[in-house]
Image 1 (cartoon, rainbow, N blue to C red):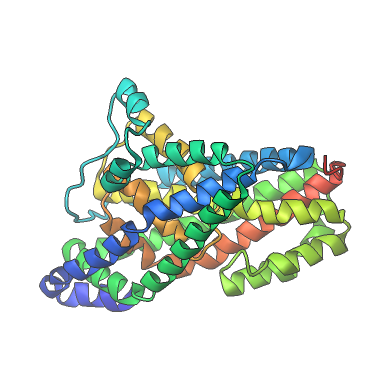
Image 2: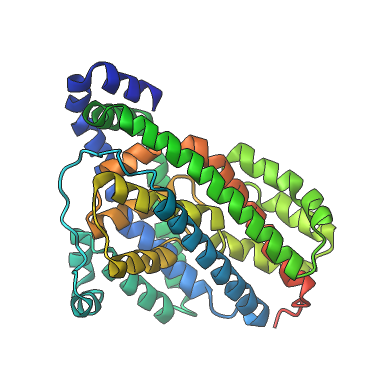
Length: 373
């Protein structure tokens, strides 16, 4: 970010001339949207069958937590408006989502999944994947195929992200060259608000633990090590083994730990959910894109579905945002702009992911849900 922003400030015309490099990088991210959604959603939904009563209670708790996280992320950006005044300069993007309610309902169902993938109609892709996932329950060979598609997609993302320093620097140079110091100011404010939002959610977690009668001091001591691993590695998956060990040592029944924590990697990444909501509304504010109440509700509902399964993969959040931006007419230049400050936010976002997972596991254990059903 620093190099690109410096070039944009000192040499604005040259910075703007680097915009094509940034757009190539963004196109590479866009190219993997469909396989990521297909692999992660189909496999996640198909695997969701047969988890029993304990799994059902866990998923219910996860959905409540991620809904709170989603509304918190959206609400704090709506109140603080960090994107207002940034004046993001970008190529106009036509929304793939119809404005009228009747049109929306009609167009969320795809005529052809290939046409939906080609047009970037994220809602149609999501609906198709959800239905295929439900139909694939019990079909182990097909589920393994979907998981393989997801695994290859994540490896593709890893290769693309090797180009991130160049793509982000070029995009930042172009954005700052066009918008000036206001861009840097807006991004710094956004990063500060992001940390505040994650801190508020830690308070929500504490309230949930208090309600479930989980001793806060003992829990804090138990999760300290997995939390620090998450901060250091910025990977929820990397902290999973130590988190499972810590929760068992804390006294949560093994059958609860072995189901709830791995399941939470797909369904309960609250820190990432907060960030997805914040990033979307921030870019809408920065680009001056008005969103009706209906569009805002549709975006939140889409994020609830698309965030499952991929948030635990480094940088996969940006694939989800890319698909959402394409569908709702938000400029992809905002995505590269966000990548410029992501390192500042990523550690606390991942830490809250792990903290929320451990808290949900402790709450399930404390509420006597140790029967696997």
